[in-house]
Length: 336
Image (cartoon, rainbow, N blue to C red; front, top):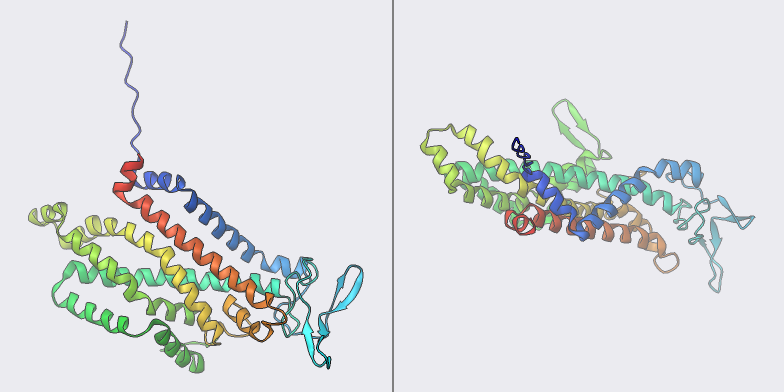
């Protein structure tokens, strides 16, 4: 009787193990679902505006009307104060085809602008976080790996940027670029280009992401496998690409959602101050600014984008905590 052949055991890779560990964290899965829902809703903005609400969220129309319960209702309605002076935009109707969340002071559909604003806010924060992580990785890895004068120069530069309050730094850069645009040789970036807030927000948060990356690289420099590679005469570039960078990648992944949450708050603040996303484009920050004067009569104009920002930031922070737990070797080993 022939002996049975041994069944080959499939070895689980580190990234697969991390993904399985992440999917076993309910809060992380819930945050991923929330973020995916927000992205899908934002991508559906043109469909909602043109096919459902039948409105142009970027055109002022104070004389517009909506059909509500079979009747034509003006979007801008008389005030209910004693003198009945002025007009107040219609409040939430809870009908998707008739100003679901009401209108703003220019008669524009708040729900449609909320979806369009989500596209810009999520795009800017995501792109700024990716650019910030790339720049921070370049600075942190170079400072930590090469040391010496390189580390001194880069660290002192990061300290200078760190000493400036982040919003003051961002506001100063935004005021200069928004008023004049940005000239890069033969290329001119206009003040309404989304590349400007992306670059500004990414730049101001580089010190916050570069410091933990540098600390991680400094600890890896003293790791046994790196010291052994140096003793064997392995070129520094090979050590950097084969040993340092793969071990830093987990730190970069964990930092990404946290930096994106900070970038979203910064973008909303700059847009609220009218030095971020420029009209007629919309973002969650610009919609809050539009609703500032209606906070007592039509609070939904400001509350809706505020809630969207809160939910997105909370989801990103919870996702960052889940990624940290899933990518931690000791935690993954315990769960296994």
